[in-house]
Length: 487
Image (tube, rainbow, N blue to C red; front, side, top):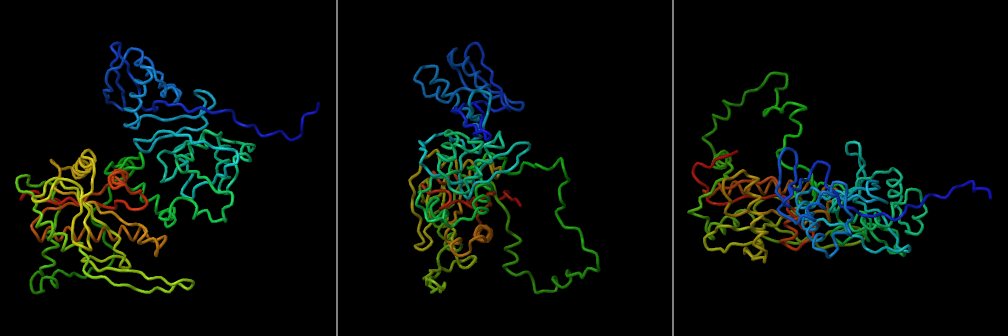
């Protein structure tokens, strides 16, 4: 029989999800069951396990079927416990392939609590690629990721990448099966779980933006959500903070810009001729960061009330009729002590209180309209995490008395400004931080802006999706020690 002139595209066989130790880490299992992981010159003690579990742990270098961790045997339960400890440290990856060591895709968790899930898919299901998904080169690998995903996908074969990009147009799985590079149902299910792919009603009207996610997600542009997720902690595994990544590549830029050529016009004599230094200028010059607080004299509730009244309270409200051509909307506005782009005032204050005379330890939302604080029920470990992370970020010797998280109601700005939204929100956050600094200085209190926040931790504490309302800044507040001066 003559072979057909056109060969059918090879359909990938069933693919299995494995769990494997990252290449940068090495396990050591001692005869007594004591297990260590060695990483970049240091070791982490993972605890004691039975001899069988310690021996099985070494298989993680090559990879263990993920389904094996669901077994009920004692050794399997111990191995699962061990992998959970490794996962919390970001030391695991999940290869997917037809057999061990032949990777079609490798999943790299970006969040500590990520666990691969494979929701059921049918041939009749229609899938589409999320508008927040992007494929890029990282070193010599191609990675597929999204700010909404708890993991990224390292693509081993160009054919798989091509098949996935074809889902920019929604397709039935049954049709996709016959395309070259079909990634397999397991990979598709894992991508759906990570919201890199999503199911589409076959009767959709052609507007994918409106059918992906909730009403708040509709208002986000790709670049803004990516910026929010990647410039804060909680939803990625990249280095964050003062890591001096480029110190070996280029010298540090100077603190003051070099002079432009031309004759300078000296302003010193003119500024000295002014009638003294104004109170505002004196306040600006006195402002400084305080990272050490007086544990014996915590801030009082009365001082906190005065501080919030002078910085964030709603002063007045009004409404405006906006004619948008096809529709007419009524938009409400407020006035507060600091300026805000388009009078949006999208910023909300959440107070993690460690020590405040007259106020119990806990998390509170500041109701700027009522000038009141409202307690939020949170677990103590979550509250401790906010305070500890603020302490670490400031390099402080102890926890601050109060950590103010500045969260944004993103839709308040993006409803009007679209692609400018996140940039405007960050400008507003900067203005508010300066206002908090000046009020703290004027009241004789100590304050310090904090550069990094954990958006996933806030989402868990507030019970709000990270794209609906989330942190864009933090400020430590308390009674500073007299010698606690900073930049």
